[in-house]
Amino acid sequence: MTLLDGKKTAAEIKEEIALEVRELKDRGNKTPHLAAIIVGNNGASITYVNAKVKACERVGFESTLIRLPENTSEEDLLNEIAILNIDKDIDGFIVQLPLPKHIDEQKILMAVDPNKDVDGFHPTNVGKMALNLPTFISATPFGILELLERYQVETSGKHVVVLGRSHIVGSPMSILLSQKRKVGNATVTMCHSRTKNLKEITLQADIVIAAIGIPEFLKADMVKDNVTVIDVGITRLADPSKKNGYRLVGDVAFNEVAQKSDFITPVPGGVGPMTIAMLLKNTLLACQRNN
Ligand code: BQF
Image (cartoon, rainbow, N blue to C red; front, side, top):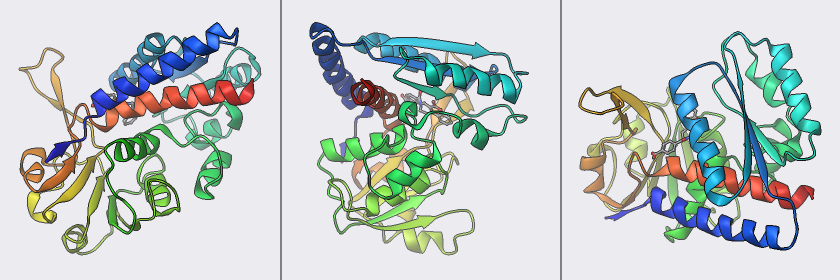
């Protein structure tokens, strides 16, 4: 069993980015600048966005965090986006999800200039991704590809089973891994809440990508020996023994599944840190493309 160490790999990627930033600055180029808008006070979202700001500091990027109250109108949020779209100093920006219920998420994502859309959520960029054209690949799928590449996990000709059909992970992951690309050429089955005989399907998987948000859903009796498992789940479960009052639990029953795995990601310290690193990578790309 080899642990796919996302924390360590993300630290390496950030060091590579920091090196490139120093070179950019030495050549008199602009410092990459990421902005993030967060609406409301969701505890997990604030943790995520703070992690992104801290990561910017680590690699020498500039960052701007725009905090808006929970009751912000759609119109006001669209106005903030319009300001970032025309701000020459901002290379890329994100709108932290999820948004409050009264705001139409799709409408907001469509307002972001696709050239600054470092989350890769604009329909133009999703379309380019699906056609295997140059674009911003959204950070979590990008991070999973990068992790598989750096650990030299073979995907060509393998049967990948993706659990979950979200627009952020399941859907792009299944598209990307079936494409003709370095980490790709897989035969992909996408499963979701209406899938019948799920266990029969997961038992045929060489690689399982679990992105359904149900703690410890994937059990040892659902996978074959020598499987590779990517756990995208990060549910917060109450745990009074922890100083922050919770622990993170993935979609995989790690201890039992690890015993049958060739490669497996832990939670925490697997896909999560890779997501942050690849957001920085996309911001660096945006800075290089747009200047
Ligand atoms: C780790 C996210 C669901 C909905 C919106 C490191 C992160 C998480 C875990 C992180 C996530 C999940 C992010 C770990 C960003 C990943 O050590 O395991 C980092 O910050 N993430 C987000 O911005 O929005 C989400 C999950």
